Length: 124
Image (cartoon, rainbow, N blue to C red; front, side):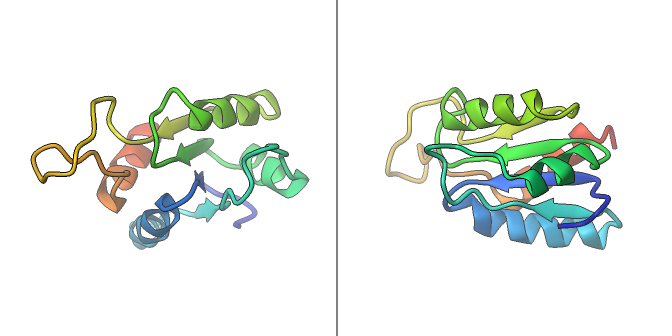
Protein backbone atom coordinates (compact mmCIF):
# COMPACT_ATOMS: atom_id res chain seq x y z
CA UNK A 1 0.00 0.00 0.00
CA UNK A 2 1.19 3.49 -0.84
CA UNK A 3 0.87 6.30 1.68
CA UNK A 4 -0.55 8.50 -1.09
CA UNK A 5 -2.26 6.34 -3.70
CA UNK A 6 -3.95 7.66 -6.77
CA UNK A 7 -6.39 4.73 -6.59
CA UNK A 8 -6.96 1.73 -4.30
CA UNK A 9 -8.01 -1.61 -5.78
CA UNK A 10 -10.05 -4.05 -3.66
CA UNK A 11 -10.01 -7.34 -5.61
CA UNK A 12 -12.11 -10.31 -4.57
CA UNK A 13 -11.31 -13.91 -5.54
CA UNK A 14 -9.75 -14.50 -8.97
CA UNK A 15 -9.76 -10.80 -9.83
CA UNK A 16 -6.64 -10.44 -7.68
CA UNK A 17 -4.47 -11.71 -10.55
CA UNK A 18 -5.81 -9.17 -13.06
CA UNK A 19 -5.52 -6.46 -10.39
CA UNK A 20 -1.79 -7.12 -9.98
CA UNK A 21 -1.23 -6.88 -13.75
CA UNK A 22 -3.37 -3.70 -13.95
CA UNK A 23 -1.41 -2.18 -11.05
CA UNK A 24 1.85 -2.75 -12.92
CA UNK A 25 0.45 -1.18 -16.11
CA UNK A 26 -0.89 1.84 -14.22
CA UNK A 27 2.37 2.30 -12.31
CA UNK A 28 4.27 2.14 -15.62
CA UNK A 29 2.04 5.08 -16.63
CA UNK A 30 3.15 6.98 -13.51
CA UNK A 31 0.25 6.33 -11.11
CA UNK A 32 0.47 5.06 -7.53
CA UNK A 33 -1.85 2.11 -7.09
CA UNK A 34 -2.52 0.24 -3.86
CA UNK A 35 -4.08 -3.21 -3.74
CA UNK A 36 -5.97 -4.46 -0.71
CA UNK A 37 -6.88 -8.10 -1.30
CA UNK A 38 -10.29 -9.04 0.09
CA UNK A 39 -9.74 -12.42 1.68
CA UNK A 40 -12.73 -12.41 4.04
CA UNK A 41 -15.95 -10.86 2.85
CA UNK A 42 -18.29 -12.29 5.46
CA UNK A 43 -18.28 -10.76 7.93
CA UNK A 44 -16.80 -7.78 6.11
CA UNK A 45 -14.69 -5.80 8.55
CA UNK A 46 -12.80 -2.73 7.36
CA UNK A 47 -9.28 -2.62 8.71
CA UNK A 48 -8.03 0.80 9.90
CA UNK A 49 -5.07 0.63 7.49
CA UNK A 50 -7.49 0.06 4.56
CA UNK A 51 -9.56 3.03 5.66
CA UNK A 52 -6.46 5.20 5.94
CA UNK A 53 -5.18 4.10 2.53
CA UNK A 54 -8.54 4.85 0.93
CA UNK A 55 -8.94 8.14 2.77
CA UNK A 56 -5.54 9.43 1.64
CA UNK A 57 -6.02 8.29 -1.98
CA UNK A 58 -6.53 10.89 -4.67
CA UNK A 59 -9.42 9.26 -6.55
CA UNK A 60 -10.92 6.66 -4.20
CA UNK A 61 -11.27 2.95 -4.74
CA UNK A 62 -12.44 0.22 -7.07
CA UNK A 63 -13.89 -3.10 -5.89
CA UNK A 64 -13.29 -5.95 -8.35
CA UNK A 65 -15.30 -9.17 -8.38
CA UNK A 66 -15.95 -12.19 -10.59
CA UNK A 67 -19.66 -12.03 -9.85
CA UNK A 68 -22.43 -9.61 -10.80
CA UNK A 69 -22.24 -5.98 -9.80
CA UNK A 70 -25.44 -5.94 -7.73
CA UNK A 71 -24.06 -8.36 -5.16
CA UNK A 72 -21.30 -8.36 -2.61
CA UNK A 73 -19.05 -5.96 -4.58
CA UNK A 74 -21.62 -3.16 -4.43
CA UNK A 75 -22.22 -3.83 -0.75
CA UNK A 76 -18.50 -3.65 0.01
CA UNK A 77 -18.11 -0.46 -2.05
CA UNK A 78 -21.00 1.10 -0.14
CA UNK A 79 -19.47 0.20 3.23
CA UNK A 80 -16.10 1.59 2.13
CA UNK A 81 -17.72 4.86 1.04
CA UNK A 82 -19.58 5.15 4.35
CA UNK A 83 -16.33 4.90 6.32
CA UNK A 84 -14.45 7.38 4.14
CA UNK A 85 -14.96 10.55 2.17
CA UNK A 86 -13.93 8.87 -1.08
CA UNK A 87 -15.92 7.42 -3.97
CA UNK A 88 -15.66 3.66 -4.45
CA UNK A 89 -16.87 2.10 -7.68
CA UNK A 90 -17.22 -1.54 -8.76
CA UNK A 91 -16.10 -3.54 -11.79
CA UNK A 92 -17.50 -7.03 -12.15
CA UNK A 93 -18.65 -9.42 -14.83
CA UNK A 94 -21.03 -7.96 -17.40
CA UNK A 95 -24.71 -7.82 -16.52
CA UNK A 96 -25.74 -10.62 -18.88
CA UNK A 97 -26.20 -14.37 -18.79
CA UNK A 98 -23.01 -16.41 -18.70
CA UNK A 99 -22.29 -19.50 -20.75
CA UNK A 100 -19.49 -21.93 -21.53
CA UNK A 101 -18.77 -21.07 -25.14
CA UNK A 102 -16.44 -18.38 -26.49
CA UNK A 103 -19.41 -16.44 -27.88
CA UNK A 104 -21.22 -16.29 -24.54
CA UNK A 105 -18.47 -16.42 -21.88
CA UNK A 106 -18.90 -13.78 -19.20
CA UNK A 107 -15.46 -13.51 -17.64
CA UNK A 108 -14.09 -11.41 -14.76
CA UNK A 109 -12.58 -8.01 -15.52
CA UNK A 110 -9.34 -8.18 -17.49
CA UNK A 111 -6.30 -6.05 -16.65
CA UNK A 112 -7.19 -3.84 -19.64
CA UNK A 113 -10.76 -3.30 -18.38
CA UNK A 114 -9.41 -2.45 -14.93
CA UNK A 115 -6.91 0.05 -16.35
CA UNK A 116 -9.61 1.67 -18.50
CA UNK A 117 -12.02 1.92 -15.55
CA UNK A 118 -9.33 3.47 -13.33
CA UNK A 119 -8.42 6.00 -16.03
CA UNK A 120 -12.12 6.82 -16.38
CA UNK A 121 -12.40 7.33 -12.61
CA UNK A 122 -9.38 9.67 -12.75
CA UNK A 123 -10.88 11.55 -15.74
CA UNK A 124 -7.80 10.76 -17.82
